[in-house]
Length: 300
Ligand SMILES: O=C(O)CCC(=O)C(=O)O
Ligand SMILES: [Fe+2]
Image (cartoon, rainbow, N blue to C red):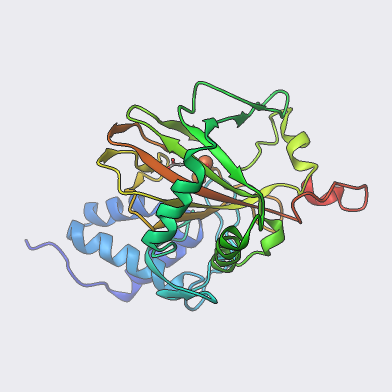
C-alpha cells in the first residue's frame, strides 16, 4: 500500500498539540512513519505545522515548553526573511524555533570581514575562557584558538558593527560585551559549551555582577573555511558551515531567567585551512553595570 502523503485535520491537530507539549519534532515524525506516512512528507508536515504555529507568524502557542522545562517566548530576533538594519539588509537563511537559532547571510560585507581580520591579526593572544571555579578568564585546553577584544564603540568602524549587530539581535547596544575576534589554525576547535554562565559553576556569579546573565550570541564568520570548523549544536544535530560575512544567532535566557540547555554548541576542529570569527554576547542589562541589591533579583 502507498505511503500517506496528505495530512488529515486530526493529524494536523495531533502534531500541533504534541509540539506544544514540548515533544521533539523527530519523535513525531517517527510516530507518523510508524502510522504509514511517507517519511519525507512526515518531516515536511511537522516542519510546516511548526512554522505556522511558531511565534514568527501567528503565535498559536507562544509559550511552548521544551522537554527541558525551558519556556519559549517570542524570539528577540525579528520575524521575516530579511532583517533591515539602519545600514544593511540581512537575509535569514534558516531558523529553528526551539531552540531559537538562525543562520543569517550578509551580516558583514567582505570588506568588513577583511578589515576585521587585518585589525585583529597584530594583537592576537591565546584565547581565555571563564574558569567555572574562579570566574576569572583562564587559558584552557578546550579552546585552541587565539583572540582579541574590541571595546564597545572603540572607533567608528567598530561602533558601526556594534550598532548593526544590536539591531539584528533586537537588544540595546550598551548591553553588549565588546566584539571578540577568534582565530583557529588547522586543528583548532572549541569544545561544546554554553555561552550563558551556568548557575551551578561557582565562578558564574562573579561574571554576572557586571550586566547579569548573557541572553544571546551572534557568531559572525570572517572567512570561508576549507574543511571543518563548523559551528555544531550537538543536542539538536545542527552544523553550521562558516561562510564569509554570514553568522549564526542563538538565544538562551528568557524573561524568567530560565536557560535553554539545547543551545549547547562548539566549534568543530578545523581540518584544512583556518577560521576567523567575531562574536557578540548580549547581557541582561548594561554591560559594566554592577549588581546592586535592587537589581540582584534579575540574576538569581
Ligand atoms: O567557533 C565557533 O563556531 C563557535 C564559537 C563560540 O562558541 C563562541 O564564540 O562562543
Ligand atoms: Fe560559544
